[in-house]
Amino acid sequence: MALIQRSVGLTVIAVLALAQGVLGILRAFQLFSIGIDLAGRGVLFLPLMGVVTFARGGLVVVIALLYILFAWGALTRRHWAWWVGLVASLVNGLVVLSIVSGGESVVRASFWVVVPVILVCYLLAPVGRQALKS
Image (cartoon, rainbow, N blue to C red; front, side):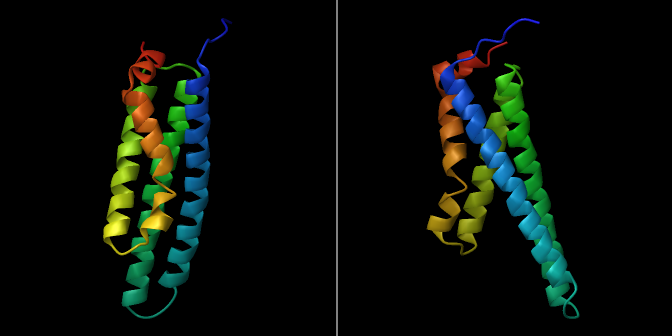
């Protein structure tokens, strides 16, 4: 089996993406728990909010899995990882923007946008495009 050569920058980006994915899954479990709790209360409004919260957790899981898929693809130098990382970052950014526009604190929401911004900057830079070139 051939040794895969990758840059330190790509390794750091992949580790950041993996951390974002793991933290995203943990956040999704928290949203699932809140959704299940709300679904068991009240007559109409709280169960409906529970379903919405549960669905939001599902979206967070999908984004987190995209980050994990990107990390694996980047570490194994798969050319499709570039697109997966870009999609995960952009969707993550849109979700954070929607959360902030819905009234969430910018400071709290900015925690979830740091890695996507770094990832997009890396992927769009020449070194990032070259690192995952097929």
